[in-house]
Length: 246
Image 1 (cartoon, helix red, strand yellow):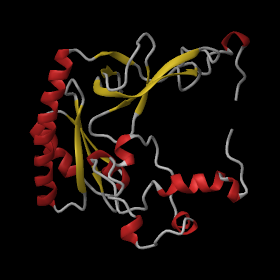
Image 2 (cartoon, one colour):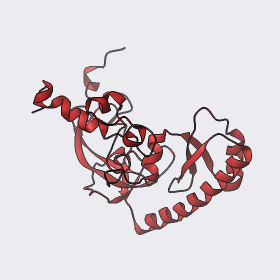
Image 3 (cartoon, helix red, strand yellow):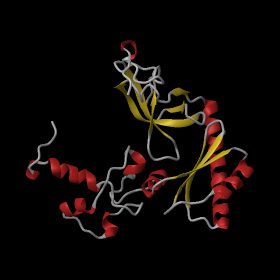
Image 4 (cartoon, rainbow, N blue to C red):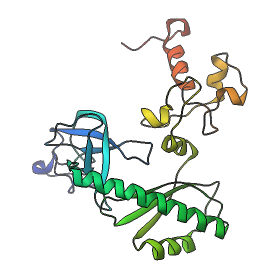
């Protein structure tokens, strides 16, 4: 790899405009039909949790809600290339998002009909319109690969916009749909989890829990994410021989 000249040392890569020594404001944005928050540069904005915003994306503007408070991180490659919050949502943006939600419901219903008619081995989860309507994305789960080329043609002819089919995991599906766990609280994956960490049956064994699948599995059919929380606490407790973090 070629070395950077001294004058460029603070810029990371040619596409980044943020020097590595400068801190950048970043917020987490959640979109109504996706479980995980995505991060955007919020320079120039003081945003609050649950505040609606419009952000840039590769496919056009998107409407979302602030789900993680502003944090300041050191700039550099990756941060400088991060998409930005374009503006606080206006009443017109909110109205357009509501209209898109109705279109997404219609699109999901039609797509399900076509999936059934074509006998495709896939389960539709949600649909997502960009704010300007330039692209319509369908999220689905499947045990394997699916040839949906004919389905995409059907959808493009019906909705006259760019169509994308995106496969997600079953834990993502639960995060999108939401619900309540056996604890009575909202599902972790649909409320605060940012990433899905690995969970193993060993974690349940070491906590002396019942290994009955119905007792330790979540709505997604996988081991409950919260098994990891207690396991991490046990590992860091004095009885375990490990030291709790300062």
